[in-house]
Amino acid sequence: MTLSRRRTLQLGLGAFASAGCAGMHNPGEASNDPPQNFSVSGQMQLKQRAAAKGLIYGAAGSYPSLSQNPEYAKLFAQACGILVTENELKWLALRPEPDCYDFTKSDWLAQFAQQNGLLFRGHTLAWNQANPDWLKQVSRQDAEKVLTQHISTVVKHYAGKIHSWDVVNEAIAGVLSERSDGLQTSPWLALLDKEYIDIAFRAAAAADPKALLVYNDTALDYDTPEDNRTRSAVLDLLQSLKSRNVPVQALGIQAHLEAAETRFNAKKLRQFLSEIASMGLKILITELDVSDRGLPGDIAMRDRAVAHAYEEYLSVVLDEPAVIAVLTWGISDRYTWLADFAPRSDGQPVRTLPYTDDLRPKLAWNAIARAFDGAPKRSASI
Ligand code: 9MR
Image (cartoon, rainbow, N blue to C red; front, side, top):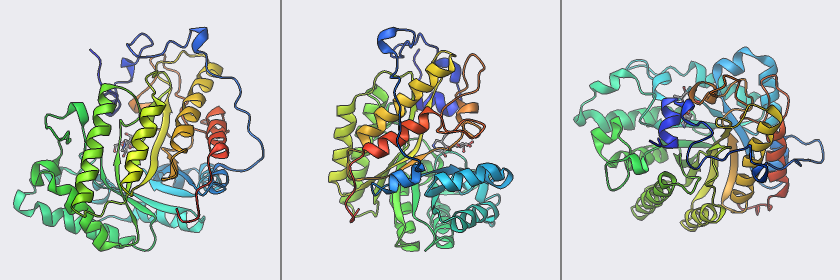
């Protein structure tokens, strides 16, 4: 049985992706060897290379990693133009009790961003995961008030200090949904049906008219039944929101990629981006990383395959002028969710992000730098 990418990643079933799975590339074949040349010129950081093209580069960071590791924090501030809260603004972290908002850790991150001249970005106001147990006790009658009050309080707390919000995260389950609209089972769907998406965006817009309001989703990248279905359901959802004047302003494409996945179809992805842009929406690549599960152990070869996946993907998405930002889900292999959620079956540490676990840039860094250097310059109005 082939499990979907979304489901295997969410359940942490990394061992599924052994090299023999259908659709997985066998890196031992010479014809499929990844390119060797990832040369980069100049000394500029990723955020500077992005900025030179009118783009923002940044990453997700967490309170434990940034507050406890000064060397990492220093590198993060040098490399990134924006900091995304990895976990600290999820309901689970922020709302231990119904009447309590604990901003301690998210405020620390906001201050870190401000002190280092980074933009700040919030993730996320409505998701089916990372919710506190007490949410299960909320009645249908109270649900709209609970969601609206949460969003109003949290968004106002950072109003004027935040670049953008992932207002709703992963509302679509695509092929995994039993509904014709592809919506993902969630406490909010159970309580408010699909209205919860409208309610969330309207509450966020009322609380901070300046923040960019993003609908964020995963499994949008490949030419697989799951991703084709997700792209189609996301287009339908965004069209429906726009037709009812729901204030969604951008699509966040998470882009959790897999180096061993061969079903990348540049034309289809490019077409999808054009369709999103034609709705007047901006696009952000919000959680980019490249899993190395399913690749052989050899580190040099693995790094080339991961780098190739970054460059191939980014060169397609950066061709679309509506893409305004590229954010990786972390910057160093030392702090990546993939170590726990998609570990390698050979037990070797994963090598998925631009910097190694001891904070040295590796080929993935070169690949991202090359994609920025080769990207068309955005016009000043974007
Ligand atoms: O990286 C995050 C990890 O530390 C958390 O344990 C996990 C559950 O809250 O969420 C991870 O981040 C996810 C993000 O919030 C939404 N898209 C998928 C990300 C990776 O699972």
